[in-house]
Amino acid sequence: MKQGATTNGESPSRLIDARIEELDDWRGKTLSHVRALIKQTDPEVVEEWKWRGVPVWSHHGIICTGETYKSVVKLTFAKGASLEDPSGLFNSSLEGNTRRAIDLHEADEVDEDAFKTLIRAAVALNRSSAR
Image (cartoon, rainbow, N blue to C red; front, side, top):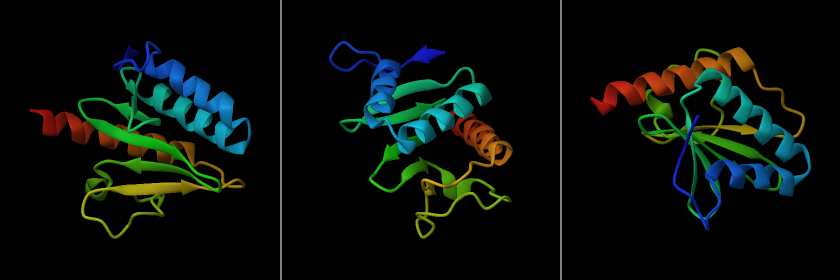
């Protein structure tokens, strides 16, 4: 797996590790779980740390971000409006023309197969747009 640019000498992957450790609750576990799914689905994914502390996963462009709030882990897909979502994972930011998001709450389970399908579709869309 490639690394994105560093912040304060720390690699983005290490900064994401630190964020997960810092959360030390369901949000950290959820972020860690979806991160693992992203890395399993796309071994060439680049982890980045942007906008003063937002984990970002990219491959020929941003796939998604992983923001954490008090009651939600928000996975925002940069080009989500252009992705098919037959499983209905997108449940937030539905009104926009570009992005779509998945809000995960404490008791939510991730449909791993559907999530991996979205990741693959986002990478394919990024590749087609990069040409």
